[in-house]
Each structure stands twice: as C-alpha cells, then as structure tokens.
Image 1 (cartoon, one colour):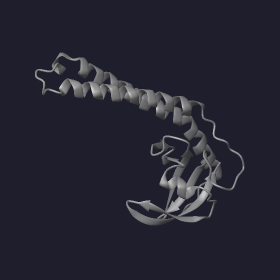
Image 2: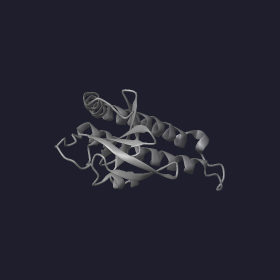
Image 3: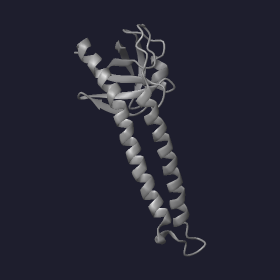
Image 4: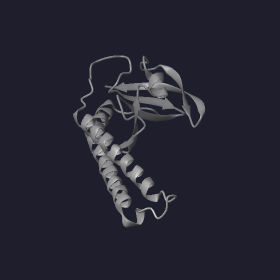
Length: 169
C-alpha cells in the first residue's frame, strides 16, 4: 500500500528542489501585482477623504504598505530557495532538507523539512508535498525520529497515529 520506488522518490525530491524557485517566483509575481493594485487604489482620486471620518484612502495606503512589505518578504524567500542546497548526508534522523514520507490513515503523505516558509504545498509529479519548518508542531514531532518510528499528529483537530515510512535524502 505504501510502496514507492526509491528511484521515483529521488526524482520526486530532485524535481521538488527544481520547482521551489518557480513556486516562490509565482508567489512574488502575485505579491507584486497585489502591491501595484493596492498602490493604485491608494493614489486614486476616489481615495481622497471627503470628511474627517472618511478613512477609505488611509485604509488603502495601509494596505499598499503591507503589500509592499509582502513583496520584500517574497523576494527574500525566492532568493533563499533559489540558492538553497539541502545537505544530502547519509543520516538516520529526520533533518532539514529531507523529504519525509509518512504513513497516516492508510495514506502516504510527503513533507519537505525546510528552514523557512513552512505551510506551503507544492504539486510535484501528481504528489502534494507540504513544506514543514522544524519550528512547527509537526516539525517538532519529526525532530529526532527515524524510519519506522511512530508518533501522533493532529489532523483536522484529531490526534492520529502516524509512522515515518521513509526519509528521502
């Protein structure tokens, strides 16, 4: 039920590492578009206050500022993942850069342990891979574990038993 070929998984991780910069470039493109739209709304003649109680223009300027900060963060994320080369040392314990296959509820789920930007999901070869940071509850649950270890995770608010099926270096 959980079997996957090692060669296929190696290709999955290699492809995932190629797709990470593409994913973060798309996020940056979306953030730039949103920032431009917010800036246009903030500087539009419709945003000029008609009374001291009219805060539409002020709200738009706050939104534009927030969106511009998001652009900066997305650029930093893109730069990081464009240059990130996770270590592929032979090791037995889950560490950052590993693609971890977990069996839970009869299904295989895949997590890539990353130093930042956890929570994002990327579709690779018809497989969803979720980025998980070590600071997250799941990342903390995986820390120090090895293949075959069982642990509990929260899925839809319910504590569920899971097993580390394989650590793909």
